[in-house]
Length: 141
Image (cartoon, rainbow, N blue to C red; front, top):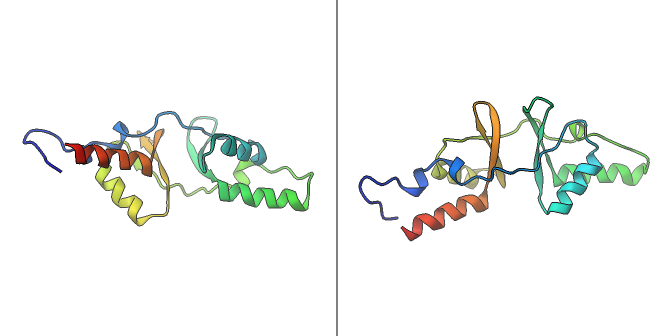
């Protein structure tokens, strides 16, 4: 990457400049099968779970939804909630964290996306693809 003096390197730019601001969110009390359909219809593999006052309380993944589908296979009348299947220990990144730091985290972790937090509120998410786009932009400079 070529850096011109006085210019900020693309990789030092905060993730909030590369994240997606629109994110499908789910509610803990929502039926998990409804949530699974929402994920499938949109072709995404996970979504953050937000409580009534906007706090990030978990993430529901396609794997979590498969566990719910198996339960329905054994009991067709069963209805579960998102909160019963979601992961509660959510790994996040801060809005001002550099793209380079997040790229390093993606290399170490198994995650495909991170919720982006600012002032303890989720403001979006950054995906591996978002980081790849930032890396590609850095190569063009």
